[in-house]
Length: 152
Image (tube, rainbow, N blue to C red; front, top):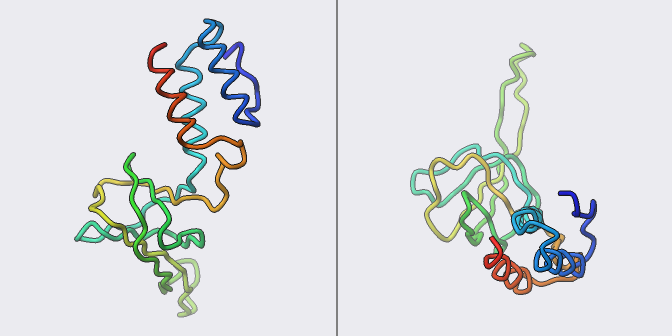
């Protein structure tokens, strides 16, 4: 990434990089990698603890950002959150033999479609939209990816 700036601070930076790709001074794959990184920042990734038998519910560690109607990214597919439930799970500490159980919170997220049973992590839509911060829309980003396809 010889010509790549260290920080992408605005949508204009992405358009400037696209111009560099079109001029031949930057590889299209490098800009594609930057765009994929930006799109991943739209989500907060957490490990999957369990997926229900009906493949509609994911259990994760406590995740306050999970809200009904938000998007979830799992194995490259986007789902919509239909329900969120924060549950307390009693966990016996192996280090302490005092007989006291520690309470740990988990989040159970219900989604609108069947999930992949092999999923190891799930991304919940971040409350702070990185695209708003950059001043660019998802449509503009998709258009840039379409132009990039011609140069790859």
